Length: 268
Image 1 (cartoon, rainbow, N blue to C red):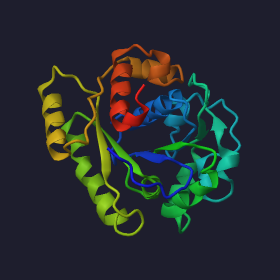
Image 2 (image 1 turned 90 degrees about the horizontal axis):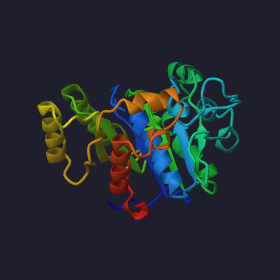
Image 3 (image 1 turned 90 degrees about the vertical axis):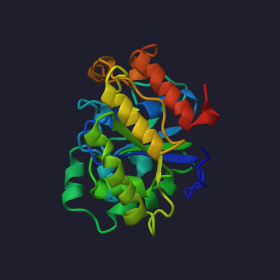
């Protein structure tokens, strides 16, 4: 898949992980994307737009980390992204990725949003264009302002979908958000770039049927399925990405294969 020309000069691609439903592994996929790009030697900025801060945690920035500014302050223009970005602590790479940390202060941004919340992030990112090669954005599992802000900035939207009917049904909703709410004026032409099936068990008939249905509806835009694994929880407990925690685990191998599809020019 070729990526459209980046509006933010100096940044190659902005990847936004989104689905208006929780429990699909969206944040896990975003963290693995940061790992994959960083291991390629790319300068990566990870932006956590979820007040739970799970992406930040998987990148080693736990609740004990001293954080002066986070993504909330960038969105409200009380801090610059260049000042707020802090090094990730959990990815072994020659080029350490940076993170705009997600904190509970994002709840206040959501409840009392600035008038330009949806476009704030998109308009702010040119200020860090010379510092990073790629940007990875994790959005909350909703269709509210913070999620829209992440999608408005995207070049490539990646939708992690658990292999369950209720998760698959949310793809149609995400499609509508992109085409109707954002695609006509704010981010012209934006669409779901890739669907990443997660929590997959090939022994379950439903899992296989969901993957078949996704593949039929989004031909050429579906990655290899990501297997369900206990390693996912163990890695979170250790405040690590899966691939840093256990790089030879089958689920880590799945993620490497999936991102090689999405980013073929960076194939390891």
